[in-house]
Length: 135
Image (cartoon, rainbow, N blue to C red; front, side, top):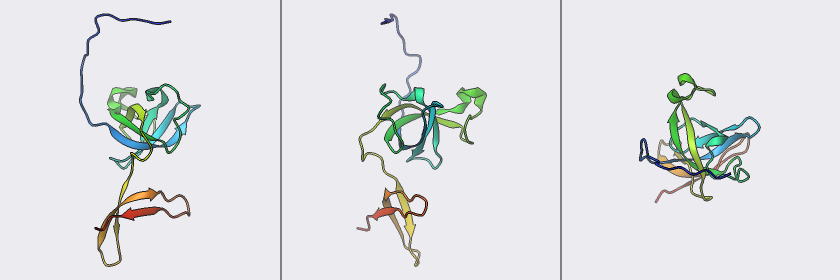
């Protein structure tokens, strides 16, 4: 069934920078997941209904996404459903692989600092890999 609308008006238009991250956990049966953000330290909760690309099959853990941020004060009476975060991701869309990357700051024994790109995340006892640009 196709529905048509007339006299559509925009109530509010907010121009903002979309944030980037990777899906860190996905609970399909429960209808939610979490995104590890490039711009902030804590993971953001999201509802699967906020995924905008329609076909859910490409949505998996470690997939790169972009999204907007919504304050939890506008849902659940200002209480966060998961964790302590007062924010959640919304309007989630997939990004091309290689778009999202995380920076790490390293300090050697002499106190000299370098910034690098995280190539492989450490998991459990497995070490990660950081590529430093010391040029």
